[in-house]
Image (tube, rainbow over all chains, first blue to last red; front, side, top):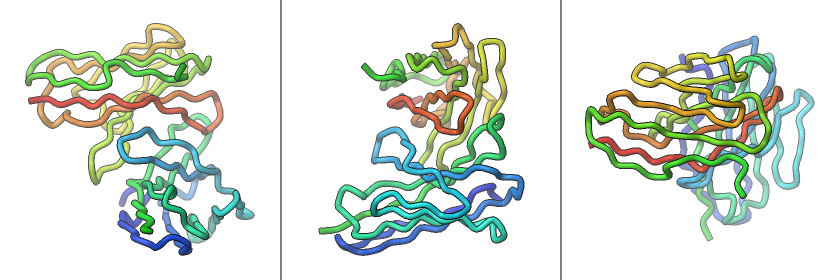
Length: 110
Length: 111
């Protein structure tokens, strides 16, 4: 079983829609969690960290469920510019490398 | 100027050739990483280095070697390139925190 699993998509949604991505991780020792965004043919960039209490950044909300080893990302009021691949990322500690999921592709359609 | 640069940005080479991909960073980070990305397989870690004297194998190090010439420079070598090493290669850096900063990538094609 892969350490981080995501639904690859693609998710095709109209502008203004709300879309949610899910991610599961297999290592219960994982301590830190993130969502990265990668535009086509570009480098990944940090979108947001994921905290146990859940956190929000504008239209983006991230949730963590440690008991179920599950992470989610909710995007409200989708924009065309949200079209990208979203990578779920976990790490066990500051001294272990990040582990990336394969990514979920989102296309927002006008 | 970009904080993390990679050279070359694109390279086509033949099977059996030796090739070096270079990465430089101006962020002052101690930690540097090399990944490859293939369609459907996501980002996979090749090698990483937490300081100049530290080199660690990642998930897929076979067929690759690295050199950490200085805090700011981390090179990836393919001693004898083969077609299944055709991929998009990313270098990344970080401090002791979890956020990584990626270079723009090198698209390598081995024919």
